[in-house]
Length: 58
Image (tube, rainbow, N blue to C red):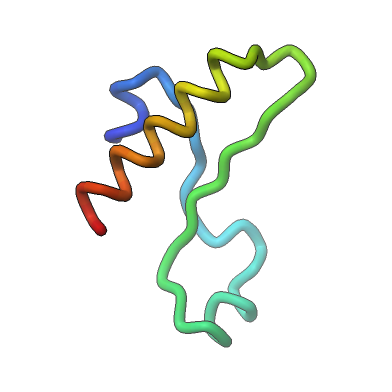
């Protein structure tokens, strides 16, 4: 939701990795994907968004 407000689409869930998550005690994950058509400003906006979210929960 926080990244969505910045126009950044991510996916949350288990991503077919439940055994690995259980092994490390992880409750959930967030996945972001990049493609050849993503621009450097989009990547920079994503990085800044992750930093902002991390600062809120860090």
